[in-house]
Amino acid sequence: MTIQTKARARCHWLPDLDAAAAPLYQALVERLAADIAAGTLAPGERLPPQRLLADALKVTVGTITRAYREAERRGLVEAKVGSGTRVRSLASDAPSFHHLSQATDGSVDLSLSVPIPHPMRAQQLAAVMERLAHRPGAIDAALAYHPEQGSQTSRERLADWLTEQGLPMAADELILTSGGQHADYLALQALVQPGEAVASAAMTYPGMIAAARQLGLKHLAVPMDDQGILPQALERLCLQQKIRLLYLMPEHNNPTGARMGQARREAIVEIARRHDLLLVEDGVQFVTAERRGVPLYRLAPERSLYIFSVSKLLAGGLRMGAIHAPANLMSRLAAALRAQYWATPELMASAAVEWLTSPEAKTLIDWQWQEVAERQQLLAERLKGHEISAHPCSFYAWLTLPEPWRAVDFVARAAERGVTVIGADPFCVGSQPAPQAVRICVTPPAERAQLDEGLTRLAALLDEEPRRDSPLV
Ligand SMILES: Cc1ncc(COP(=O)(O)O)c(C=O)c1O
Image 1 (cartoon, rainbow, N blue to C red):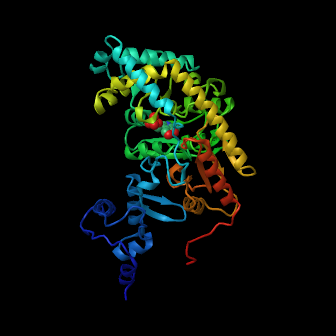
Image 2 (image 1 turned 90 degrees about the vertical axis):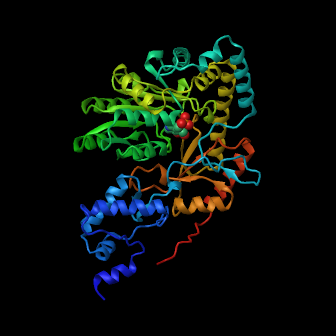
Image 3 (image 1 turned 60 degrees about the horizontal axis):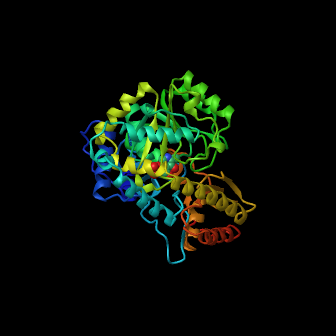
């Protein structure tokens, strides 16, 4: 048997390649894309090792490496240290909302960072809609076309509210968006060209990873510690290649909870100025004014965007957010938004702003801060002795698993006991190795007792020896 015949027998994926196609690596990527689209290659399926596929196709290993790299850049596959290259699985993208519901079977979902369910939300929104409906001209205004950045009235009211929260801004510095994810996407789409590089902490919000991939941007990971990205590492990366934009969550990184102190913020701003980086500060995981450090947009107003959303305060289904940006970037952001869908729906914007600025919303938000702090306290008690990183305003905690637990086993064992948590993988940028850690959200259960039950089951699990299902060979 020739080397090629032997390799062909061992390759579970053997694309038909037109030898005349040039360049060959490109033809291979196209074949890969077609087979994924046709379902011949399933999400999560491992691609043949590079050397094996090269032998089977009688091409150089370099051609396969280039093809796999290009496929990764196009978001078709993902390469992880130690586990080869796999077809990108939707499940490893941003955590999905599909499965989230208030369980009746004793299971406890602690996977997503959502506002705490409470009947107050529906009652308040109903009252707000009623008020709007009876306010002369309000519905007519909501039904009219508005400028790309959103109606003047909604922007003014939102700017005033944010200013009261210790985030001073003016209406003409704001552009309304359909939530925080839209704001993140819009910032990347409007300000970074396909092929250019953006950077973030090595572990970051999966929606940002998905947006950068979707837009064909190079996403670089900056090593981090418990204060977020390391300035020296950022400096090194900037010296190696041109980075256009740096995405950060200075108050508490999703998922690790890292919070930047003042010196760290200043060091990063200084590097951003020297290397001409745009800064995107994602404030969707909102914190109270007294817990907040100086926002980056106050330290470097000429190059910083601040992103806000009502999703964590009022309701994720409202899809209402905003970008605060320097004047020279406004027209590019507005043009991108116009090209997407003209403007954020004013009916939603006016309802969300009416609710946010109402006395009822203050009662709801204050209740939620108190409840979040108490739930974090409960988590600290139930998981006492374990390595937890959390913030009193945070909807989640980051648990570094004790030896010899691996995140994949812990997530699976927790699921067997009816508790859903998310491992580190979806938060890792590119092929960054995932730490053996999980994110535990304290907010999804309506009742604190359900959270307690879920945490108690996790604590019991942590005391056990991990069981591995993986074969030894
Ligand atoms: C850091 C961060 N940014 C953006 C979002 C998305 O916000 P929205 O639901 O408003 O689109 C989330 C949601 O969890 C988030 O954690």
